[in-house]
Image 1 (cartoon, rainbow, N blue to C red):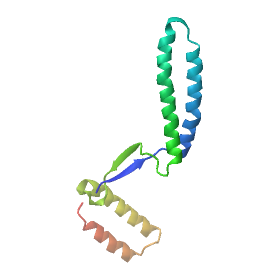
Image 2 (image 1 turned 60 degrees about the horizontal axis):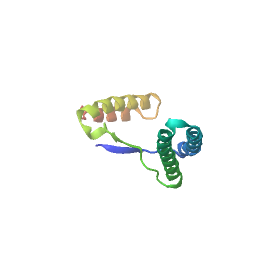
Image 3 (image 1 turned 60 degrees about the vertical axis):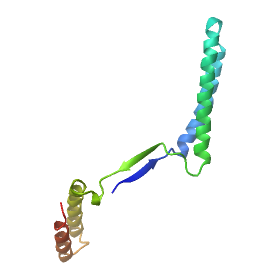
Image 4 (image 1 turned 30 degrees about the vertical axis):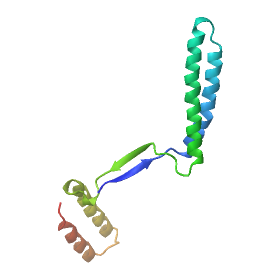
Length: 126
């Protein structure tokens, strides 16, 4: 059985972005404003791109902060559950036996319950 998990940006990361993007914007405008001579037209073209990038960061941070469900950055496929067959059940089989032994050792189950459950686990396909 496969399932998916979404990785979403945190509110804290959005706040950091909302603080840093305007600082970058001011920094870029000040530096580009100091350009003189032949470089000035090229610096102004760069400034347009810089302002657009900083503006998009601000909009994205606001989107994260103001939405109830921020946009997913990544989706991850999760594999390896019990029903995956021999590859997934080998690890599960081992962990079941270890957990069962731990429960008996800690006195949470009786020897009779341990033997019954161990027999059940041993009959599973592995």
